[in-house]
Length: 120
Image (cartoon, rainbow, N blue to C red; front, side, top):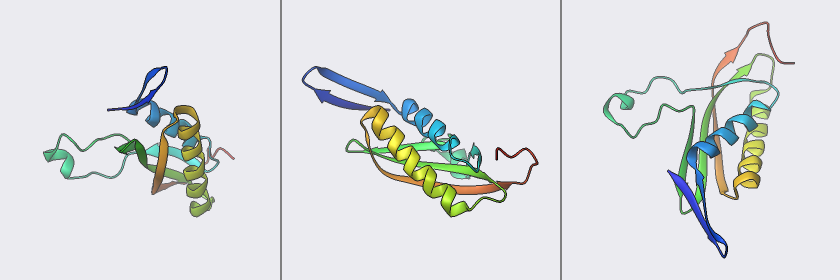
């Protein structure tokens, strides 16, 4: 899937994979994020080819993106604060780098990383 924008100079196409890559990099810059994770097993994956196994999903509707991602947070960080920072950073990065409007960034915390190797 790609996003197309027309201008006087021609057509610009941005791949969904580009948006996913930008969102991933922006989320990993937030202090307290251990890694981007896939959501827990979903039985729908067995029966549908449309359900993606990607850790980050982009849904486009009328040229506007909705981004959903699952993360693992390091222990000791405020989950709400980390998620709010991710939402702001991902939205800003995708919009500034691609010109695609982002309506929502949904962040799900699926685990806490208690390892000693925290990026503090």
